[in-house]
Amino acid sequence: PKMRRCYTVNHTQIIDNSVRKYTGQENYTTNINGLEKKLPIVNVGENLWIASNASYVLGDINFAKKVAKELKDKLRDNDIEGLLTAEAKSIGIGYFLADLLGLEKITIARKSVKSYMRKPLIVKTRSITTNGEQILVLDSLEAEKIKDKKIAVFDDVISTGNTINSLIKLAKMVGAEIAVLATVWLEGPWPWDLFGKEIKSGKLVFLSYLPVFASNETYHRLKKLKDELLKRYL
Image 1 (cartoon, rainbow, N blue to C red):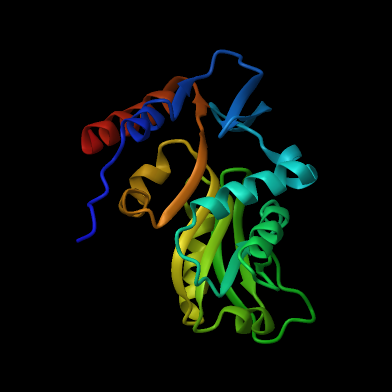
Image 2 (image 1 turned 135 degrees about the horizontal axis):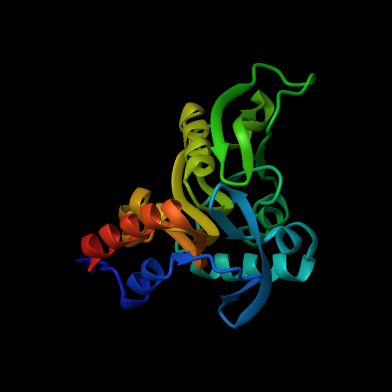
């Protein structure tokens, strides 16, 4: 019989550190299995700041290769037939991860409808780093790559869950079987609220975490959520 997976002390520590009070911090150092990177802390909304990973996931080839290898090592299912991700920050790591999985192509959901697309599938979404409503679009040719296949869904960060949930929705629209959700970082308290079951079972694989930084009412609201999550999982 399979051993039941439980939340580890490490998981509860991550939840406990997922929300921090903003006091003017300029940088946050992330650690991915010994690989340390200093990330600038940037404002993304009223009383809310995040550690921005953009300079590494978009422009650092060695970083992308290393984290792709770390993710591959954590994926237990070797029968993955496709990989779905969203533009733009996830594409580089997605290429390297797909290559390590033995895939020749990846499927990319775009953020706008292009003139060349035929019968595009469209879902609405929001992002913590982008103001207003967005869309994710899957061209019918892209959809064919994962139709009725066993796939991994990858995003560089899972935060409020909007992007990854939109990718899941697109995958289900074309009949794909989602074998695993993969990300480099969990950010803030929200993933533990939305995907606790998947984290516990190992269906959601992550390498590290990023806290969110908040002040005033935003801090108190997020701290309340964090405290509720700690009670739920301890």
